[in-house]
Length: 298
Length: 74
Ligand SMILES: C[S@@+](CC[C@H](N)C(=O)[O-])C[C@H]1O[C@@H](n2cnc3c(N)ncnc32)[C@H](O)[C@@H]1O
Image (cartoon, rainbow over all chains, first blue to last red; front, top):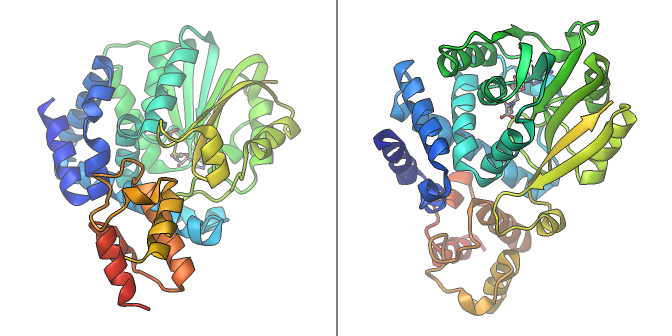
């Protein structure tokens, strides 16, 4: 736990808002979450990414997100709208992408919005089973590793467009599931180019849809690889700018609409806001970021 | 700080204007997190037709500092 505290201290020195925000953060984490966070921090350290690197990574994602948030307040739209504009300096830039993904995995524990979603995912996936499991865009690998621990499938497959994400997911899973014999693979590919003859009994995709130019085709593709009764779980964001978000969903109906048009139906959905004190209604009214998690079926 | 300025900030934070003073900041106004900070900055820029740099705006320690910087620009 010493490193967790030191990391929070290092972050706090650099950013007054994070200092305030992270005060008392440890009290809001469960023992299991504290343990996982400490494990993640030591895993990165062992890989040569010390606490200073992790601080830099976290501060980078905070600052980049705030820069885009300011742009969004000013212009009411995301700065970029094409894959080409962001791929080069994000997904295909190993140095940036690694910092980004280290920051993003820490945000799963530090940010209210991501922590709530991680808990939600753990809750709803407990015991889900089948033959083949697919995750699109695992990024840092946290969800993929979780899935392998919580669900029962003969094979787990993940596909990510970033070589850095592929490498990080592989390393993270190898570390987290050290003594497990679960079969898995992580492949480097744009999901648009993924072989669609394969069928999966679960398709999971966390925060990827806002990264693509054409969410409708993306969802149609998901539909085509999902088996008849597949468990389909996707999350995306509404009015939530980030350095690589290119498709802007302005409200919940726009998300539900594109899902339906892709031939998928909504079993249930849940929305999340940046702060417990910000209700979903308030977030909608003020155009603050909302994360939406949907359980879908074909 | 004049009333118009304080009203503007109170409106963004959706709090009573009487809660605001020169020393107001993220540590004593619970609604004032980084998201709201940038909304406050954006609203001030829009209203007074001025611009702060990102690093300048990130470093403001309290409302008094924001007001002083604003005075230097209008
Ligand atoms: C924001 S991260 C999400 C990480 C994790 N799933 C989560 O929810 O925290 C987005 C990931 O999607 C990947 N990605 C973006 N576009 C993709 C595409 N067209 N095909 C496959 N992966 C993609 C990125 O490389 C990145 O690793």
